Image (cartoon, one colour):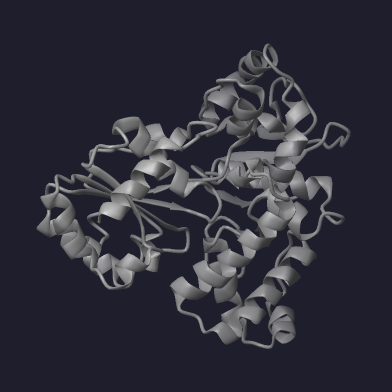
Length: 393
């Protein structure tokens, strides 16, 4: 255990956090069992260490960060480790990559009831079903989702600003005033294209080729997060990758499930399950008409965020697809999006209608439709700059 304390101290002392994540202030840290879910590459490890750095001195042994990748836990149970940690004055255990530990839900539950003085905060893949399919933890764990950088966070980081987030209703009511507040400090359009290309994943800050790093991360999402957690045999890996590539190349349309099943050489039901797994891994988003949901066929399958578009097919990504993917991704955190009709792109939360468009497209839309307009600095009325929706978190 001594080596784990030393690793914790070293990691916390050398932590450099480029921007403070908004989720840090949304979590009720008084809960005894907290799960932080998120797709690979969004900064879950940094988030745990940032919490430790903000609340504990590096040498304070009441808090300890551990990673389930450590071979130490291949023969040492979490329940026994928690007992030893508490005996040494431990009170807060930060566990990274919880899904790498066998029987993790059973041991977390036992720790919860056996050690009421212990708080456990753990990270896990977005593919993990902590509540929906896990009765052992359903009533015990409080689950939060760490996303990639919003455009607001990216702008704060790149321009050294301190803009705060707004709710959707605040943006709809006061978008002219909010936009002017931002414009008094920076031209957001100077940064927006770069954000769409590489700003969602924090690892763009690393001195490595971003596109290669993202492709590697995407492969890990499929090879580890999907296959390992869903316990899918390795021989089906190539089929999932092939399906993902076919969907990406088809663009944001309704999937032809029969055609995809024929090309991948599997059943229609398996194709739908694979699409669901890719959606859980935050590689895809499924868009349904209002009132419908999985396992029905979606009306559109989109990439989860614009960075993935550029990584998969940079020469084919048209402006409309990029903009609609950004809009879907940024509202996805707190809102439900459904398929629109010929006059608008999305229903949002059943009662709001949005059209994502560019200023040069002259289309008559109903008076109660909001237009998220690309390449617009400041809007008026129902015309709202597209970039401003990046301030929702």
